[in-house]
Image (cartoon, rainbow, N blue to C red; front, side):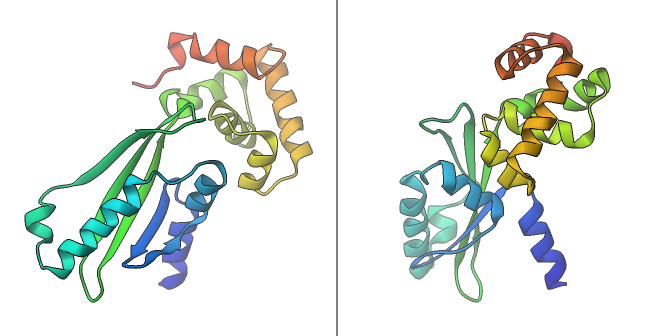
Length: 182
């Protein structure tokens, strides 16, 4: 069962952080990728500290009665981010923070784009990351492929879509109302 849990945590598209009273005790691959590009907002460790203080006083339900979300625009990111908090109380308190990127690619119907331009699944995987603002090296690391393979996939996407570069591709996709998910 632990293998299944590890597989889920490492492959899910959401970053997962677990905080103990002294700081981060777990982070999955997506959370590590987040840290390569962004700094964790100061509010998160502060809020976790307040949660642990309330747990030590047995006042979690009183001080944090509902769901806890932090919505943030991060410097240098084209996306908005949501940080969702979940409190685990026993046997030792733990705060899980789920990092969710509200990215451009999530607003587009990439299945429709894939079918329209007859893209392969891997080309679509690369395209999703390009639209989210990742550099070729970051895409290569994320997909465990070489940077040259990323370039080859993007060249193929450009030919199939009839564009010359990332800017033209993004502009075309974002300006076509048929490409958006409802």
